[in-house]
Image (cartoon, rainbow over all chains, first blue to last red; front, top):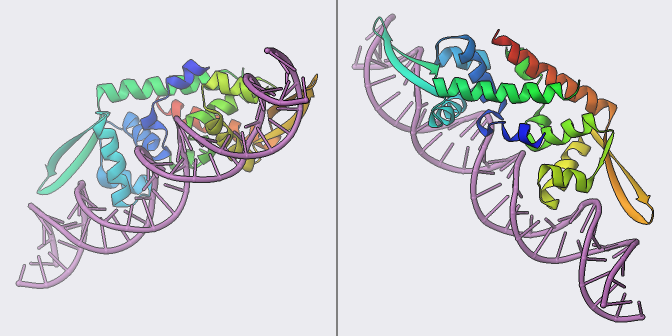
Length: 99
Length: 99
DNA sequence: TATTTAACTTTGAATTTCAAAGTTCTTTTA
DNA sequence: TAAAAGAACTTTGAAATTCAAAGTTAAATA
């Protein structure tokens, strides 16, 4: 049990970061505003959580233009995917304890 | 997705409290030292997390004696069980998003 | 040229977390 | 019976985290 808990990653303890990662697992990329609207966050709050995940190299940023409009898209990195999957597996193991 | 996140209970965001609840779901009751040793926590830290869960009425305390030794046991309350199960279900739903 | 929009950064206050030390009560042990 | 030890805390204080709100910058549109 203790070993399960140790597999939970600190970066994913926050429900907001859990939400960001979940969205990025199911959507190849998402832009700032999509995340912001979906998760109903203020700019600053979202930006700081994104930064926290970026610092861990769990997500990456791709800045492009759509026509002439700047567009910042976020995507999950391979490490991020791995880390998040490990985290979810640990949660799954916790859930299975009940059975 | 947003609605899933809203079902995550703040009290269970901490891995320590997640651990306490998990232990109490699979063990009818547990005493202070069992939790402390299993989760490798200091007295103070454990006590404050227990207090946080008790404040939400998610766990209860039963003080007894084993022989002449005082023994404090913790157990999960029906509300606690419900809340924890809802939380795990929300996590399960998050996990299932990937499929 | 003025306004708007995107995507931040900064600031600061509130909350949370944790370890360490102190406390109380009881039980052993010398 | 006095001293030491153990259980289960409480208190303290520092560090880290979280969040909203306001400020910033650069480009785009009116």
